Length: 246
Image (cartoon, rainbow, N blue to C red; front, side, top):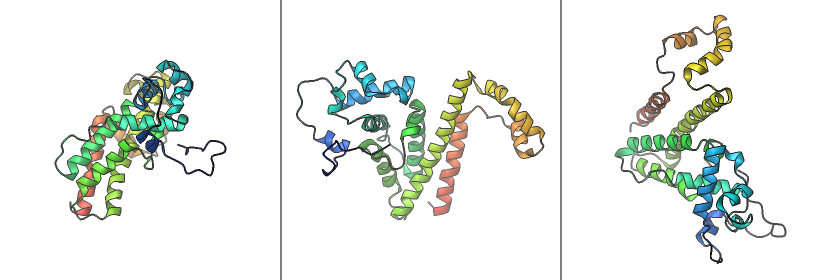
């Protein structure tokens, strides 16, 4: 996401983040509009119609307020997206009990995947450098779980990014596949394979991919993304545990 641009004539003023402004909002007339309502309404639009459908004008219409009302809270769409992402991260059950670093990291990974699948547009808007209160609560939980295991600060971050990087990669694949199916009207894995059969048949008939062809004939969990995710996650966590002797 692009950084907030200062209004004309204020380029020499220090920038104040969205989160700092929301911590100390300016006095406002009586209104039912809040940052929470704005985020909730914008997320509902994005979930139903995609991120591109979210505009300040559409948001105002759905909230039943004047077109400029939301600008009391956000400067434009960039900050609106920040607010939306923070809102969905705030729904993560980070307070749920978990024993040990591995169970904690597993729970974080599973919940992050569920969040991204429920809100596919977050795959486009979330990066390791996105900063918001609820997003920072995720590494905070992970770092606390990893503390006391002899890892220095840099290694702790590397472990955290390895797990979340796996989640993001897996979810991106799932979201992309779902978009492909919707584009072509394929309802399930069987229809998807039928749709891709011409390309796949040509490639397999070249004889260049015998190992992949064996996978196509022998695999029984092609349409089980939960199993695929969990198995990959176990590989990641076991690799971390083995490498660092945790």
